[in-house]
Length: 501
Image (cartoon, rainbow, N blue to C red; front, side, top):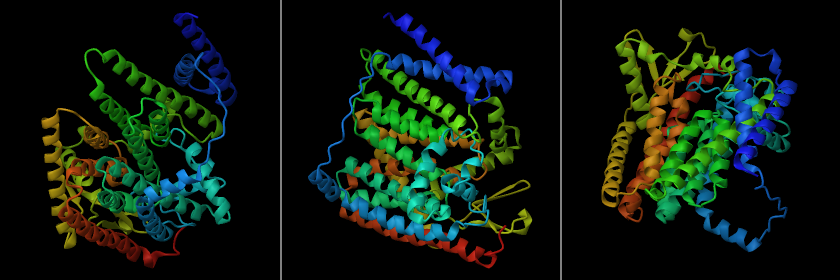
């Protein structure tokens, strides 16, 4: 069959299916005219591409996977260091998670702007599906609630405990995947343990591995995508699968997947292979977006409380989280930029002393933040004691990483995933200049990129014992500093226990 005819029939079939589905399950006729056109346009285009791509290419081959005990034992032995490290972080995250997430009190926005109570309900509560799921999380219910249900089987249907455990498990899995990634890059297990521990001890992961939110799940998907690229397989299956998961949890993070995929393909790009390069990037993008849109539409039908990111009526709520920063006075723009730089390069890794807000914000429980905004003044959380030592040491590591990165780029004239990590940091900087109030809330979206950049760039020093010892000392001091942050929060809220709603 000719391509043109196949395309026409694919679109026609997609249009019929989309119209029937949206009419039956999404009340198409009751929506605003603009939303009707957008809903039909997006769903038809996405489904049409999938039908067109799959036409004549689907081959069903059902077979049970072979379980080889020897292979499993070998894999466990090989990955034992990473597993042990992840278990240590699982215990740590669970310990603090049980104290910082309240089962019967709404602590939304108290802990660095985290929505921990609503996300606990969304993940594991029997009625959590009734809570609104905003457009930036296209099909998070599909990805998170099954895991919450599974843990409910072991916790006696205790949604609070299930959500805390799942959050900690995912945080620990980030540490394990980081160990795998750096081990592959450096071929040094000890160095991989140190860098993975650095990720696990970073403010971003240490805090949000304990405090329930969506962003630790985003981090796991982003790291999983980096692992898929690292294997350098010609098949798109793994990158597309991980990219769809990333898309489903937090829509904007797909941009980082796109950046990573393009950078990963750049070494293969020549004048002769430009067509092949473009086709592969297009196929990756189209498959991810098409699958993401189709699943989002099904998700919205299954969970009526979900909003569709491409519907104008649903997207308007995001204006509440946007900052018209370029329409603000100069001091506010400058202050926001400085805050974002401090957050991305310092607070993400090393916790400062947070500000505490109480009666002035009308809260029953104190609010914690890494900045304070008063008329004409942006105030930023500061460091003291060990924190200052850590900042100087971390600045040296960042500087050294930048030198190694540039030297390798100039010497080899080849790019690798280090460039993707830099571009991902730049993307997040541009995005959060005008989106989000407390930047540290979004830090799991870029913490992996920052720390992987350091880990990959400094890989030539992986076997140096003096460097390993210095890094270990840094991690010990960092662990002490991070525990002090959480202990400070716990001590501050202790007098208020039992006063929640």
